[in-house]
Image 1 (cartoon, rainbow, N blue to C red):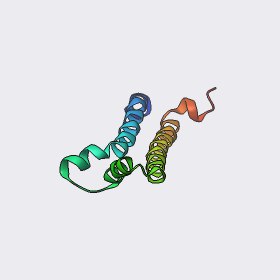
Image 2: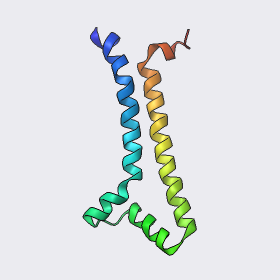
Image 3: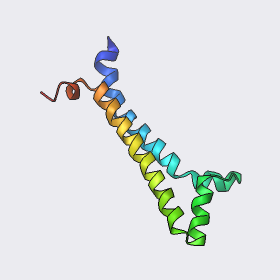
Image 4: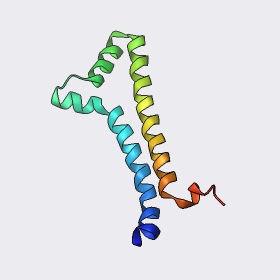
Amino acid sequence: MVFNYAARNSMLPSVTALSMALGSAISGQLIVEMIFNYPGLGTVLLNAIHARDYQVLQGQLLLMTMFMLFFNFLADLMIVYLDPRLRKGGK
């Protein structure tokens, strides 16, 4: 009973914040890789910047953008599922 009224409305900002945090975590992985000396996509990005390899740099930025867009789209779908006002067409 409480879930139908209060919990669904209170989860909307949390879903949005979680999707933004997941997108930022994928994009901000360079810092973690530098701290733990773990080679990954952030290291590839840094090496492409130093070597001025524009194709790899554009590919990495496209990949990070796609992750951010995917998580935002997933959050939008979850918000439509959770908010009954959006499911009914806003009327």
